[in-house]
Image (tube, rainbow, N blue to C red; front, side, top):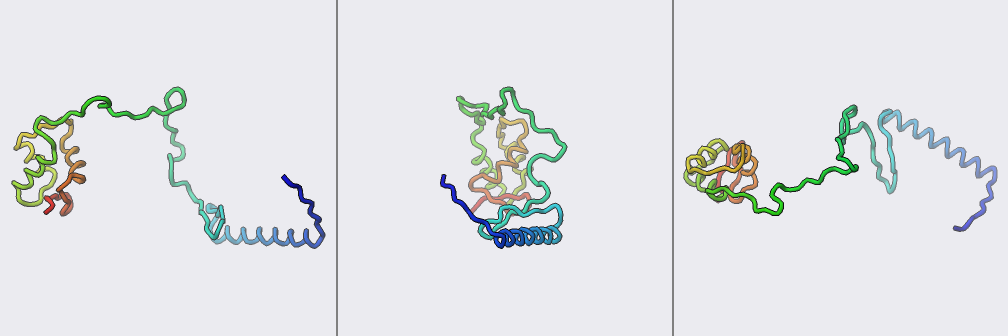
Length: 155
């Protein structure tokens, strides 16, 4: 590190003091314009980040989540790790849904699809089949949403 000696004159000090007073004046004006709860930070390259009321994270007054012993959160793992996932004895869900939709010939809602699957004796391996079907229908290949709660086969 190199040390540089600076000689300060009274005129230089006076200019520095004037600048400091001007900065404080502008900060006061900014506070009046934006309000007391807003502060501008990080003015670099013409951009600023505005900080205001807290919007993310837990709500004030709410306790933090408990952490397991050792200070780390438990890592989530699949209950099927190392084992094959169970499949329905009646086959995969997507082809069964396609079959029900072809038979219906028009758009169906989740309840009608579920009734068609029951009619075809589809066997579910989940405790709540309607919720499972409602969640999976949106990402099922060959199926598109055609209205509020209505689904049809893609052409």
